Image (cartoon, rainbow over all chains, first blue to last red):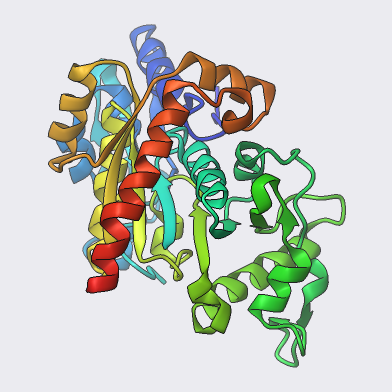
Length: 103
Length: 258
């Protein structure tokens, strides 16, 4: 199953996404959690903690900074940029905005 | 007084912006509200219906390079006079492009027109007589793209949650790269002293005002009505009135002295 969660700010998107991912992970699914919010907070709801959530660097940012090589495959990107959350969930942050005029 | 209200989604930005605008207008100020969120949250908090906001679509044209420009003869002040709507207490309200039946091209023109209005506004003569309250969409994105160039004071709404506090910290980090901005953290949806302590700890910063969690406010929002009309004596509206005192007595004189 491939699920996207949408709605207004504060509606509970991140809480539902994170809890659903953990529940499905516990039920034996191989779960990939993608945070495509420019203000990524999925790490909080998945339970990786605020410090780790702040450390997670976005795929986009890492590529823009030239710190990471482009990966030829989606699997490579998940491997290179992802982080492990509880219940076997793999978390990847897609975008994040940290500066004025990021281009 | 030129203010932008910022913070995570659901942290109470529109309620703060709309109620503050109405309070300051009642005190005799000429208030202009600017909603750069395409969903009409501020319009509702001001007491306008969801469909009353005007679009800047007719104020723009494409130039020879195919870029949207305000039409000849329409400066930012005229655009505001023509395309803002009048909210209760004499508040003028300008809405960024919103979804309508005309589809994407119309919206793009409207958004570009709005962006030019807010960027040219601070050079207009009317700028200093206006009290401006801007409502920004959730998160750091629009702060990063300079969607509040008119603001000298940023009211940063923070709820008692890590998501809200981390969002606030990211926004503060972005604002710190912009010299001269005053950032005022405001605690929102506070139930008890523990909430307030948690917010200050997570934020690493002192709070300048506390807006309590308020059932009456939630009911006003459910009904789509302005909190100041529906629940004028509710604790949250009272707290926003007290925050308006703080802005007028402390923040504005300090900024003028500086």
